[in-house]
Length: 264
Image: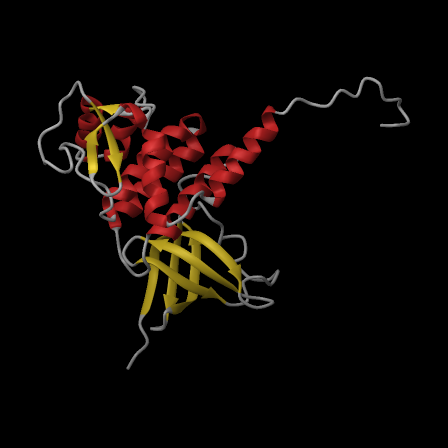
């Protein structure tokens, strides 16, 4: 039986780790085959043509062969389109990768999710000032595509239409329910309905950015609870890193005016 070969498949590297002194195991997101594992043999050698290509947050065209759970990388080239995000946007892109690694099963294709991810990464590179909006929009679309997002147009237990003026909380078990005084910051029925309509648009991520720019500020905490519940994590590693970096940036510089030149 001939070994199956795939070539020029649109893909992104989500994660890479050492397999041997010269090789790597890659966790990649592909458009037509979903998330998969590839072994890149000899890629750590200075002479490897793959070495400068196999970077995260870069659109790639990959080829591989084999029928095992871990296939063998045969070809890799940059697909072009945008450069890698930098600074805070790079951390945001790493957070998207961690979400996919935690929540997306292997060998489960989601072409629409791949397209949402590709656009989100491009926007992080080209419009880093909008990264918070991009993260919220992608979180919503990821949860919907893998079947973990409740209907945002109806109350969860009664299935009645939302009251546009009433506040609702999003819960992992029930979906949307009328908010209580203990729920903190929640969204109104009108805001949830606007998000539901945006996700049905032709370009849902773009439409969501427009809705989110209007300021449903409570969405971040609502989605975070949902993501933690379904991933089994109390905090995502990349999110904690982002918080640590932001804390360092806010920390005032030490007063060194009393030091002598020799001390410095």
